[in-house]
Image (cartoon, rainbow, N blue to C red; front, side, top):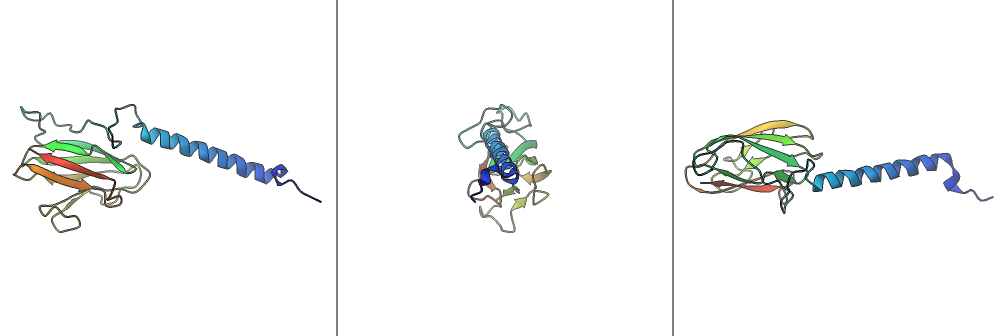
Length: 161
């Protein structure tokens, strides 16, 4: 006797579960790639607005709080401009599911060395918030930052003016 396994009640439940999981994954991917809250998204998936500080007469943020959201494999904002010698507090939020953090390279332009500045906490689970307190160098230039958990895709630049 041949049994049609598609007629068994348990398999119907499994099929329904898989269908719902697939629909949820699709919806999550769509929200992540569209910016999630209707904001304009750049080529790398990051929104264009960065600083909270109103800045100096040139429009360069002089210091203060800068909001940065960590999504799954991107920083929103990943192109930040600050004044030289500015004291900055990055207000960090992990809006993603994956574990993230933020590490600013030190004077040696290398990561995982004694002169780096790392977020507090050093590990953000989904929904976590924290800060990274940093002082810009005196000289103009570019300083790199990244997520230690996604170092090849989750990167950014702080332009010091």
